[in-house]
Amino acid sequence: MEEESLLPSALSLSLKVYKRQTVIVLLLSILMTLVMGAVVVFQKIDKLKTDLISLQTQLTREETAASNVYDKLQKNLDDAEIAQGEVEEDSKSALKSIVCSDANRYNNKAQKALKKYEKYYDNAKEYLEEYKLRYEEVNDLVKEINRIQEELRMDSFTKTTLNGFTEESQKFTELKEKDSEVRKSAKDAQDFADKLYNAYIYIMERIVAGECGSTYCPDLDQFYVMKVIENRIKHPKFPNTLEGVVFQPGQYQPTWDGNWYKKADKRTKENVRKYLRGEVDTGMPDNVVYQAVFKQGDYVWAHVSNPVDGGHYYCGIYEK
Image 1: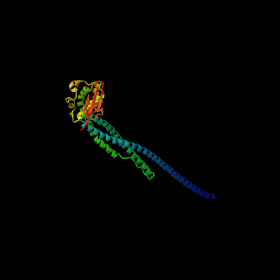
Image 2: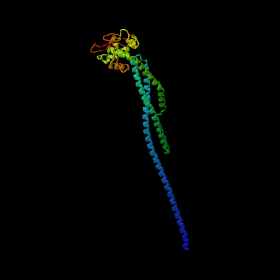
Image 3: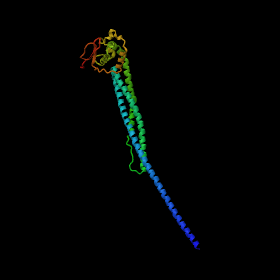
Image 4: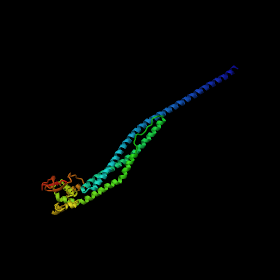
């Protein structure tokens, strides 16, 4: 009987121990789950912080790169606009020129400015496209940084310091709208310069060969002769055309002594080409309108000597 009464007691005790162990195991499991959850949370936070630092570093780098592109964009837009103005101004001056060398000199400047404009225009176009891409990339980075900051419950949110590109796009559009006009101005200047050159070349080669085409006459003499002829074309005291000046009675000896038919040598042809194409700056004032082996006019501006006939005097008249 005694043994039978002990059996339920032992059973009851075992059940109590089992229940206690079960509770302990359950509590430990919950604790482990909480710990593991906390570890996961902390790992996620650490990763977010690491990602945030990396993105902020990348943002700084990208903003710096974008700012450099923006500066280049601005400079090329400004330079292209300036070059456009130079093309138009020099083209107008070429078209207003009365003589060949002036027209070609201004045309040379216009064509040089056109090349600068084309270079700056193409650069601006490339930089604008690059800046748009970098600007969008920076904004994407800012959005991702702000997302992480919100997830981390951070109060401060990042903003981009970059300028937009709306104004720059408008400036580029304005350049583009004037593109055809600028190119037409340069073409008109080139056509006019070529027209004068073709009208001058034959007569200038003949008169320079006749006046100072001998090998003992220096290059400077040839340039000065052509400058005096053009000065006369521009001066009210003389005819206003090349033919009128060269063939004015009693003025240029080669037109009546047979030297008109003297063939220009290679040097003379090259000097005439260079002068008419505006590649030579003689420094001679516009009021120097006389060239002879003797002095005349109001003053002697220069004397170019040679070993044969003493050389030429280049003389000017004072404006009244």
